[in-house]
Length: 165
Length: 180
Image 1 (cartoon, rainbow over the protein chains, first blue to last red):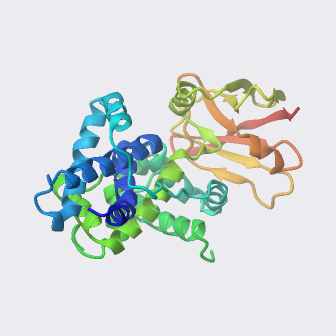
Image 2: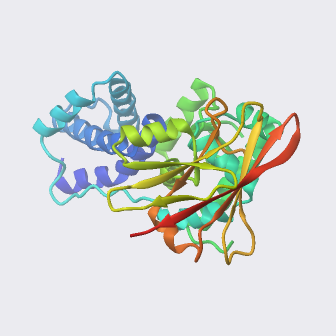
Image 3: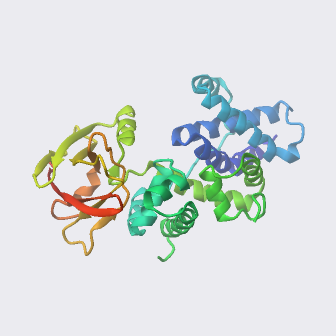
C-alpha cells in the first residue's frame, strides 16, 4: 500500500477510533493509546494481506477497536504499550493530531447554561449518573432529564464551537 | 428514528454516549459511525465536547472526584470551613488546587445547592444538586488557580439544603484567599 494511501487511512480513521475510545475507555490518555495501537494494527494487517475484504475496512477497524478495548479493560495496557514500542511506526509524514475542546471556552459556556441544565450535564459526565438517578435528585422524571440534557448539550456544543448564543 | 438511521440523530448519539442504548442498537450505531464520513464527523465533534466536560473540574466536586485527583498526583490543600467563620487558604506554588470543605449537618439533606456570590457580578452562580457527603457533613469547593482573576474580592459560598422537600439556608461561608 503506498504511503500516501496509508496516511489517508490514518487521517480518515484516527478521529473515529479516538471517539470510540473516549466513549468506551472514558480517559483521554487511554483513547490516544487506542488510536495509535489500532492504526498500527490495521496497517500491519494490510501490509501482510490479512484483511480479507479491504472494501469493508471500516468494519475491520471497528472490530480491531472492540478487541483492543476488551484487552485494555482486562488490564493488558502494559503489554499493548510494549507492543507499540516494538512495532513499525505510522506512515512517514503522518502526525497523529487529535483536536481537543478549548477548556477556557468550555468553562464559560458551562457557566452560561441554566443551573438545572448545568447540574444535569455535570451529573451525567462527571458523576456517570443515569437519567433515573438524576431525575430522582432533581425531582423530575427521567424523560425530563433526557430532554434537559439534550437541549443543554446542543446549546453547549453551539457555544463551544462559536455559534451566537 | 432507529439507532442505525442516517444521519444518526443527536439524541441517539447522546444515548450511545451515556450507555442508554440496548447493546444491539449500540453496535449498529458504532458500525454506522465507522462507515459514514458525515456521521463520523458529528460523532468526533461530540466526543471532543463530552471528553472536555468529563475532564472539567466544576466548582463543587464529590469526595470520589477528590480521591481521583489525589490518585492522579494532584496536590491539594484542604481547608475546613464553618458557616459564619472566616477561613484563610494560601494558594502557594506547591499546590495545584485548593479544596474548601464547607461543613454542616447534612445528615438529612436530600439535596444541596450552593450559590457562589462574586463581587461585581450581576447574579450569583447557582450550583444546584451539588455532590455532598452526608456522613462527613462536607461540601467540597474546588478552587482553581485561574479563579484568581474572576472577581476582585473573595467569593461567598451560600449553602442551602433541601430536606423533606423544604429548602433552607444553612449559612454563608467565606474563605480569604492568599495568592503569593
